[in-house]
Length: 469
Image (cartoon, rainbow, N blue to C red; front, side, top):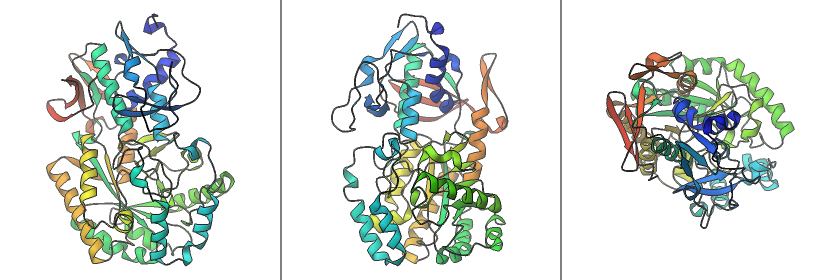
C-alpha cells in the first residue's frame, strides 16, 4: 500500500476508475484510486456509509445477506499522499448492482421455474380477476424486502457520489470538472413508453397519441410482433409519422423468452429480424423478464427491460441506478418508476402520489424518469384521469424545472455521444470535445459541509446530499 499510485498496475487502476469516469465523464487525472489488497473470491454485501454495495472485499468476508449489520467500508479506506486505497473495486460493485448479479437466479442463470411455466401456459385462459389474484399472491411480502430500496434505489449513484467526495478530499480539489448528464444543462430527463399488449390496446393507440400530443409529449410504442394482434405497416407508419417511436416488445409476450438459453437465442434471432423490419432501435421484454448476461444476442441499440426496483414485478431484483448504463454495445434505459398496471391492479392506487414521490427522488439525482403506461389499461376514464395527471406533471417539470422530456431513441443517441466526449483543459477552464459538444455543458463538483454540490458552469443547478465522508 505504500507504493506510489503511479507505479501500481495500470490495468487495475484503469478498471477501478472506469465506472466513475464513465458516469461523470471526468478527467482520469483526478481519480487516484488504488486497491488496498486482493479481493475475496466470493462477492457479498457490505456498505459504504448508508449505501448498500455488493462485490468482492479485502480483509473482511462480505455478507451473503443484505439484512442485518453490514460491514462499513469507510472504516477501511485509507488516504495517503493523495491516493485513496479502497478495500473494494467500485467498477465491480457498479456492474454487480446494475446487472443484478446479487440475485441468485442471475448468479446461476437458472431457467424459468416450473410454476412460472405453468402460469404462462394457462394465462391466456384466465380471467383478469384471477390473474390479478395470482399476481398478488406471488408478490406477497414485497414491502418487507430490504434491498433494493423501495420506491427508488440509487445505490450505484450514491456510491459514486461518496467516492467523488473522497476524490475532492484526497486531492484537496475545490472544483472537479464533469460533463453534465443531459443536453443543454437539463436538470433531469423523462420518457414515456407505451407497451401495446392486446388488440384493444393497439386500436387505442391513435387516441393515446392524440392525448400525448395535447400535452406536447412524444413517446415510444412497444409493439408485440407475433400472436397478440396484427402488426400492419400502416399501423407502424401511423406511429412514426406523428413523431412517436416504434420499439420491439418481446416476440409473443408468453413469458417464455428466457426459459432456457437455447430457446432464447432462437427467439432473439427472430426478434432481431423484426427489429430490422420495423426499423426499431430499441427492445423491451414482456413482463420485464431479463437475463442481462445474454444480451449480446440482441441486435438493438438500446433496451428498456430492467427495473430500478423490481419488488412488484414477476422477476425480482433491480439495477439500483437511475441513470442509463451500457451492457456491452447495448444501452440500458432502466424502468425507474412503477408501471401503471401495477399501480392500478396490484397496489389498487388510483392517485399519482407514488409517481410523484418517485419523480422527486429521481430528480434529486438528476436521473432518468422512465414511465410505462399501457394503452390497454388507460382507455377507461378512471385510469386515463390518473395518466393525464402524470402528463400535466411532466409538462410542469419540462416548463418550470428544466427536465428534458423526450423519447427513448433521443436519450440513446445523446448518451452515446456523451460517452465519447472528453474534457480538455483550456486556460483556467475546460472545454468539451466530441460529437454533440454544442449541446453539452461543463459542470463542477465541489464539497460543502460533507455534501456533494453539482454546479453548471456559470450557475448552480443542484445541491443534494451524498452523505458525509
